[in-house]
Amino acid sequence: QGQLEESGGGSVQAGGSLRLSCKDSRFYDRNTRRIAWFRELPGKEREGVAVIHIGGENVGRTDYADYVQGRFAISQDAIDKSVNLLMTNLSPQDTGTYYCAARLGRFSGAWYRPDQYSSWGQGTQVTVSS
Image (cartoon, rainbow, N blue to C red):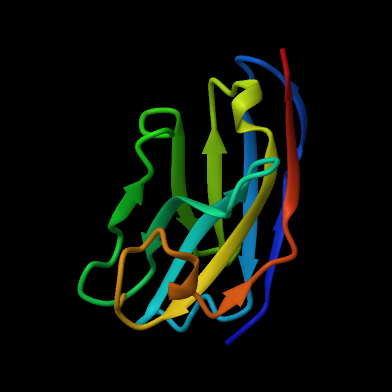
């Protein structure tokens, strides 16, 4: 399934920005790859943040959770073989561990369900102070 490695987490004040990066060793498996960012907030279940279709019939398509729409942007970097998540206007409610995940093939359910993904990174911590 490939190996995913996140980077870019850290601490920032409310209103600030961070850019997370997910390096994907299977990036060029373009026909079927979907890459998503999830997060785990303290005391809560893992939730989908954003997804991008690297290949397939919806190549380039992106979807976002309502609570990040307009603040976060997911993109791919073919040269760096990575998928990035630019997070702006961060609030303390965004504090948590962020994971990237990969899926081969079409979704069999909603993109924001963790069970749709077979590969996961180790996570990177994001802390937003007020």
